[in-house]
Image (tube, rainbow, N blue to C red; front, side, top):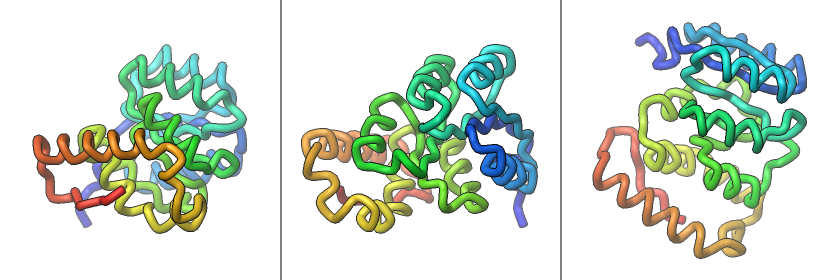
Length: 179
């Protein structure tokens, strides 16, 4: 089995639930990453300020997640958003607008490595295109089939950006996702 793209990467996991932090850290370790953890907003800001991180896996609720997302993006650290309670089309849109590189429900914990690898390997738009291809049926089930209709202008513009990025950055992991 080839080495994971997250091997040797310093990845900060942020969640206010210790058991979920343990699951995330265990998966990261299993794939050779160097995990660090924070359970509060303040602890996460301290770790983002004092240590160079390759990636942040961030719970959007309970730790001032959107503020941490903006803080990490300003430091040019890619962010993967995880959520259970804020799993909504609006939170997905807000995460994209604020620079998150992926948005995942917590229920695939223990299986997030392929998403993290995409974030590290692909451009912003290509990573989103890959994620949306993988998650579209899940988002339809969770948000309803019409989840993009309430912000149709946003989704049409984002689709064009992904398609434009795709033609400029072809890679073997991309697919044709139709919003």
